[in-house]
Every structure is written in structure tokens, then in C-alpha cells.
Length: 202
Image (tube, rainbow, N blue to C red; front, side, top):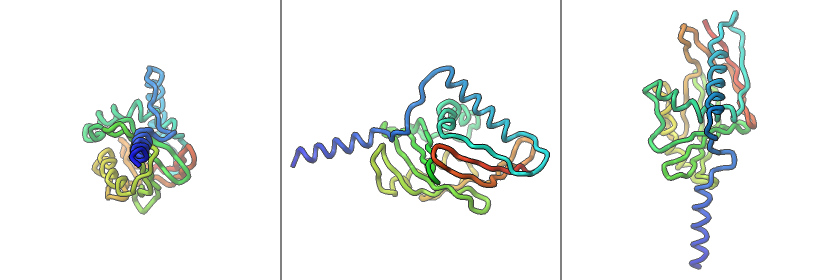
């Protein structure tokens, strides 16, 4: 009986410390840093482009591309803003796009990877991310544990985020430096990619 308990505890430890198959540390190197810079510049140029009309426009972005940006540009971006930061001890966030699901994995102070699954949707003037599942490493855990992490994730979204224990939301529109507003018209989350459609309002 004692050996079964030990094996069970060992299995729990292994599953909790082993991240899901899609979560991995990004390799170091100048080429990766350059990729992150290039991704950021490309996204900024697409979002801020001056358009002749208010017709919808958009693009598709892969989760691998997002993860390069997260690995190289998130911390400088948060540092530059000044008011935003990752909670102490929580590092290396990664995302995975599934069918109508966005998974966010973050390495915890205990070296395990906390994974929270959200189902995003548009709701009036907001983009709502509803909590639908959570796990530690490869081990599913009660939803309440993920719910305790939602406010933590909300701390990196700034003052405009609305956070509760089972969801967080961000404004559906954001303002550019020249006063134009970009409205999220629609989006689609599919396996490995996120399709976004916007409308730039003068």
C-alpha cells in the first residue's frame, strides 16, 4: 500500500512539473531577438497604417509567432509602459491557439507551468475571455485553481481590463497616437492561429 502511495505522489509531481507538449522555453540568441523586433515592427505598421476608408482589414497570426514576441519583447514592452508588470516569480508566458480556445501557460515560482484555457468572444464593447479549464503542467486541476489565477493575469492588462474570478475582458477598441481608433470587428481562433479583422475609425 505504501509503495502505491509513493508512486502516486511521484506521478503527481512529474505531471505537475512537466509542461504541456506545446509549452517550451525559447532558445537564446541575437537572431531570435531580431525576429521579435521584426514581428513587433510589422504588427505596428499594419495597425497604424493610414487607410483611405473605414473598410475592414485584418491578418492571421500563428501562435509560434506570438510566442517569439512574448519571449523577446514582452518584458521590454512592460518596462517601457511602467504601470504593467508580470507578477513576481511568474515568467515565460506562452500561448497556444486551439479550436475556439486560447491557452496561456506561465512558469510559476515553483517551476511548474500553470495553464489556463480561455474561450474568447465579442460582447458589446469588450473582448471577453471566459475561463473554461486549467491545469498544472500536464495534470488537470479544479477550475477554482485557474480562477485564482485570472486576477493575476489581469494585472498585465492595465487599468482598462475588467477582471473577475471566471473571466477577464479588455476594450474592443483602442486609440492610436494620432487620435484614430481601431475597432475589433471580428476574430477566429483555430488550431495554431488567430485570425483578426479590424476597422480603423477616423
